Image (cartoon, rainbow, N blue to C red; front, side, top):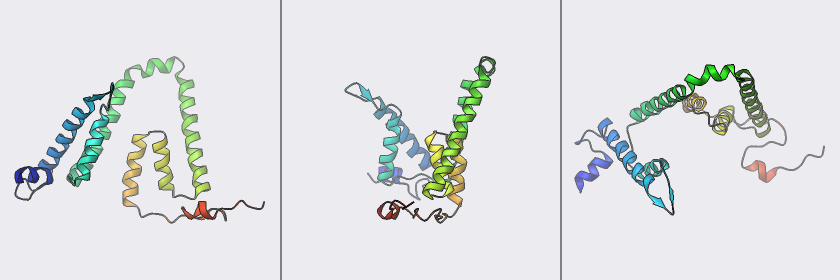
Amino acid sequence: MELIERLLFGSESLWGGGVAHSVLILALVVALGVMLGKLKVAGVSLGVTGILFVGIGFSYFGMNVDEHLMHFLKEFGLILFVYSIGLQVGPGFFSSFRKGGVTLNKLAVLVVALGVATTVALYYITGLSMTTMVGVMSGAVTNTPGLAPHSRLSATCTPEPMPRTSPRVTPWPTRWASWEPSSR
């Protein structure tokens, strides 16, 4: 039993709790998550979401992985994600560009511009920091490549104090308790 505990929670005498321990934990999370995802209850299965739930469970019980390895895996996973999307979309790009692609690209630019305009408007209305608003925008449009630099930048930045953009806007959570309509 002690060996299993040392394997799962790391030990200086067994691998030093470093990369090998982290790879074991990640392999267990993926393997158990895939098995959980294949279970069907009333015809419904979790699929790859099972890996997320097993990872949350492992984290809850204190099974951590090496910080440097996790950073590498995040970056490597993002690179593989963008590369696989490029492989999937790339071959048909130029043929679809000839068939109305200019119109679709203009529409895409409009959607991004509206997202940026909405984010800037919410920045001034709510008084939240710009780093928070960039995260909200990236999350709202599920822009993983846009979220990666933001998360790296926000990890190194100190939080900004919330600016008071108008007399009505006060920092959350007191904003909702103390807000009163203006007499204008």
